[in-house]
Image (cartoon, rainbow, N blue to C red; front, side, top):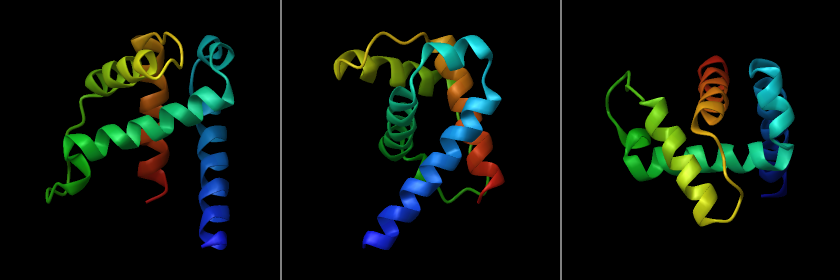
Length: 103
């Protein structure tokens, strides 16, 4: 179990670094590592709650704007701050790019 947690932490660090390299400078500066890590978790929550991860299809269309809206709504609900959906969109796109490259 501990080894699995360490592997998850390492994967999160790699993904966070990847996202930070991919997004525009103003987005990098606006969001802390903790906020981006929270967004990464919330993106996965969206995929679970929407059924995307359970799809039998080889390719699934993901509406990144819907995901961005969900992340922003959750941020307000969980008092994480007010996030701009257009900025969050870049983070979601980078997250998806990371997942595609590492699966």
